[in-house]
Image 1 (cartoon, rainbow, N blue to C red):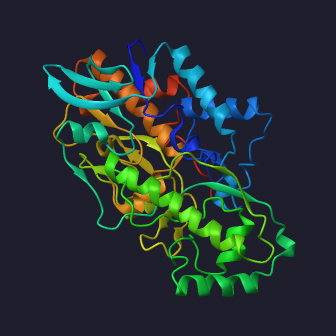
Image 2 (image 1 turned 45 degrees about the vertical axis):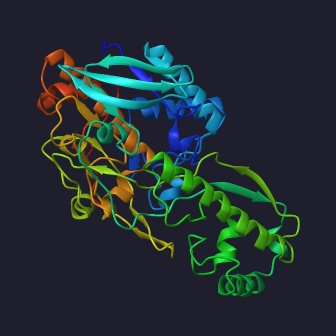
Amino acid sequence: MGMRTMLVEKNGALGGTTTVAGVALPGLFHAWGQQVIAGIGWEMVKQAVSLAGGTLPNFSDWRQPHYKLQVPVVAPLFAATADEAVLRSGSGLRLHTMLGAVSPAGDFWRVTLCGKEGLTQVLARRIVDCSGDADVVGLAGLERESNTQRQPGTLMVRLGGYELEELDFEALDVAYSRAVSNGELRATDLSMSERPMRRFLSSRGENTIHVTGVDGGTSVTRTAAEVEARRTLTRIYRFLRGQEGLQNLTVDSWAIECGIRETFTIDGLERIRSDDYLSGRHWDDAVSNSFYPIDLHRPDGDGIEIRALPYGTVPSIPRGAMIPRGSNNLIVAGRAIAGDQEANSAYRVQASCMAMGQAAGANAALSVTERVPMAEVPLPLLHDALRARGAIIPGEVVIPPR
């Protein structure tokens, strides 16, 4: 859209949860057999799938479990696809860089970047905060909110070295219960409480470890989360290696960082509540769609609460939930937008975040060209800009009756 931009990324690869946290299954882009999220993120996902020689799920079969409609990608190839998309756009790119300070400077933001070469300052007319933790919002001195009990994190791993058909799961569950009772394991270590060993080992450990009592919104608490995640994995690994049939257990892959589900959300001009999400409320200032069940990983670690959306429901994301109260030139995209814990557990997923990111970027660019605050960009203008780049506008997809 003609803006001079810089993308600042704390890690060595773009892609966030999809790449460095190991959840290489972006979704959901389709609802009830219809595509409801497209645009820049969707195009990158398709390119990464094609590059890897993969295939897309059968999105028309919407009755299958929701996780089967997520799109498997090869994480390093997705990261490379994202690299090329950013560089092709003409944007500047700073990896291994974090924000150290943010302060208003007239119509600009003065931003201090912290890199390997030290501190550097840049001026920005607008900032899009996609940190997941509302880092810019906090550095700017604006209000952030957090729940007293946060959802657990997850360290993504893939285990090997065993054959499922050779395992005695009844004996393993007895041993597991004994290990919890004697303190060798914690009851919260696994994301399921019913038939824990069969479910954990059948999934090869993927997305089944709960790291409880973690925050992750600051460097101090994030350090504690990473240490606790690896400590939890080690605890589980030692226990399993002592069980019949698992003596040769291996950790074949692991994510380099613990996946954090929630830290801070902003105090936005609007706030998405669970009933807004479950009812598919169409906001007057809706800028993108979202589609995922309520996916609340219980803060005590005892399982997951999944609530499916009623047929035909396609939730939307209002721009007001992306704009911090008291700000003019700042917008947020991703899990840190304003919402309650249940709604957040659904719209925090990758496809929804991609749609929000495109909407936030377009809104920021138009805010500059129109010389208006973020909340005053004319919605028809924003919607036209999004359509021009392949995005789907809320209300445009009609779900047929059953």
